[in-house]
Length: 372
Ligand SMILES: *Cc1c(COP(=O)(O)O)cnc(C)c1O
Image (cartoon, rainbow, N blue to C red; front, side):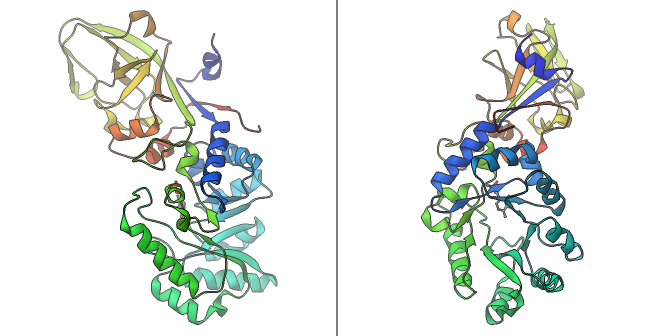
């Protein structure tokens, strides 16, 4: 029995997450982003990889500022990380202000109402509270609109009781180095901040860290790159791979005469050849759009996905793989060193981010490395 068999146990597929690689990626992003502090974005359960495990590994590596999307995610992360700053990007739910302060969570304040509610909460507690104030610079998603920024600049008393403040913005096109939108957003943000009370600024996501020193500010907010996704899509990936997804071959079958494979009889195999059925499907995050387009690796060979993706199964063509290597019980690699998440993503017409955050719940999860 291999160590993989042991980790796999009763499950059909094994998701291995390398926490040392996550920590190494954080160190690389830290170095690339010097002198800014390097934060870490753990929203959506650490991009599907486990916010608690990733957060602990990164706190041990020296990360001091974490970002989540939801209050609920912040409360869960606070339960395992007592020291670091935790920022809730989706903002303040004004009726729940007491939960933010009780769990020492820092809301990103996205509109004047949230600023007022947080300031009022600080006053009610007779204390001051930290806040990130999100200034929209062109994303038009979250953050203070230009007219709200003007109003705040002419009357900064709205911020009283909110301290320390961090001014933040978010780039819409950071992975496109040549896109003029990046510099336009930077300029709008810098102009807005210049009229507001002096405070640290936070601008860059993963890709933003690679746009040059002007984009670094005081605190960076990488997410995807920590998890091995290439922040510089037009250049080789400077990050280490973090995720390995392997699934068992359940059956193989010989195809001697022309016949079809799978639902809809959508894929015709002319034969002679062999098809292997693997224990992973769209319920596990192998998106249905990868049907007849993606590929897996078996014993170092590429095996194209043939036919539609089922809920729990995929079928792959193993005709050219030596028969003893593609047998029931053998493992196929779905994501791994030769198959980065971006590869699977491309076959489904999506991005690596969506592949990671779609990873299913019924894998055997195996964490390696880290300070656990
Ligand atoms: C998700 C998110 C990030 C991280 O982006 P990546 O591209 O994954 O590095 C940073 N800032 C904000 C506001 C976000 O929503």
